[in-house]
Length: 298
Image (cartoon, rainbow, N blue to C red; front, side, top):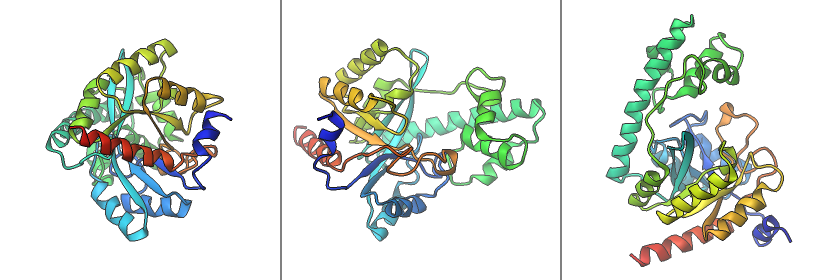
């Protein structure tokens, strides 16, 4: 029996999605609509893991209570390791933790400065764009590159979002601007400060060698990494089994999620990702038991 079959054999059809985004970062669904969309999709629990933001957690928690959807409060932190952007998801966080909130505000301040520079460069390239218009269109969001890209598409200046990134604002493109990041180890510490579980997100996306990935995981594990997002929308072939095996070798929790963004990534759906994703509810039960034991040992 494969690792994936072993994981899902006792789930009785209950699925979860521990990686989703709302309009509080770069998703197209409001936190409320996200909860109802998950209910419609037949998912039993979801985690809201907006990029460097916890602004949607209160709203989605309230919506979850109304529609009967279990909500896991989360966040996705952007970090850097050997010039590669690495994301670390925090699950079961206390989103009111002052240390976390202060650090997230630093991210917002840095991102705003970066946005202004990107918009200025796009304007110099001949685009009709202004910071005032971008921010007015996204009043409750942590504005980032996807919002800028969507504006150019919605105003008919570029055919699609991917083209904006590929030609203008992706890394190495003429309008790209670096932004402030912390290290993966600092992200683990910050998530633990907020009493959450630190999960290495989507290892399949990183453009690093397998050897470097294992070194990264080992370094993060030594500093308290709790799990790996082994089940993910963009996994291919034997990736699920491979990342689950790595998690077990390092004695780490197995997590999984779609990385749902709504219109920003229309081929990814809540719960099923690109069609083959299945994250069993028992993984969430395991996390809860782990977190309980961890808190009791303090």
